[in-house]
Length: 150
Length: 315
Picture 1 (cartoon, helix red, strand yellow):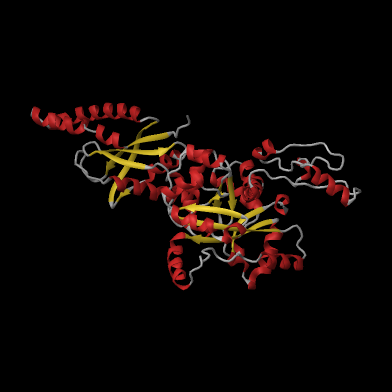
Picture 2: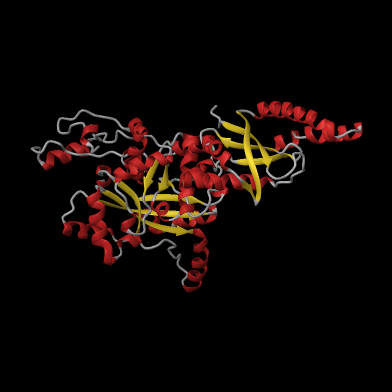
């Protein structure tokens, strides 16, 4: 049995000129589109065609601004090399940084879980009441559904 | 039988427009100077246009109208080539069927002109059409539509099913020269072939509408880098696999086993030779490329004929 190898890239979208914890809604397609544009710019038609198979991007969490991108193994090098050059998502200035590149969704899952819990602890000092904390915790750790949809 | 002895390089898809009266000679010279020795003239037919034609013609005449285009006269080209002094030039005719519906394909196959074409290529547009191609449609080449995004759901199983049936997968480079989106489609498809079937049975042909879109075979070999082919594969894509297409096509038209009987000793008188041929089926296997025919073929020792081996064949 031969299977396609995929690579899952976890990126964080850092916002410039806005506060750390502002909520940001970004449609899934926008991330994929801007990555494609950048790949086209850096690697040309070949790059864009090469990453086309099995390419998706999902925005994971509004609180921690994590997105996850799936590409085929091989062309993922083209994607990872062009992600640092992304400066804008539809006129919003951003900076993207790669947090993790995994071969399975399970690995990504455990990484994101760890990451979210860390960032939750950082957020804790802003919210005082336990109800608020619980709500935030739920929102932050609620990413299984999105991972499953990839 | 002349098609068993074709020579390379091959370009199995050149549109008829490239051989219009005004540019025929230039096109032939151009192709010959690049080293092409076997070319196929392409006629394409779209089953979506077919429907309307059928209705119109149905009203006019009761007899079944031929839905296929008239075959381009190869003799014209041959005459032109001999006038220019281009020897060893083989011309084939090819039909590309773009279809989305399996009902229409039956009409096309049954039409009397269908058998006159040397090569048959299919371009399934929908997934059902593609499945139909995989399961029960005999053709030589699986082509694609360079203008639209590839909507076919390939899988490893289907790919090898097609390979077993003798299909070859075509990549067209000349639309890619013209346009960025066609270029992307080409590269995307070639990568799909690479990942699903290790680019087995891939052939590269031009699909050119003008002679100036044709490139030299050596350039195409280096172009293979983009399509995920290694050097050997890309050489085979214009030489070996394409030859297999032509040989397989002869096989498809005549039933699976193809044999060529040839007298290699010139002294034998014609009468004796005729006796030898008619007395029994003393035939020589002449086709190293096809496994199927190997199984069926048998060799009988005969004083007048020699066994034709692989080295008798070109390439």
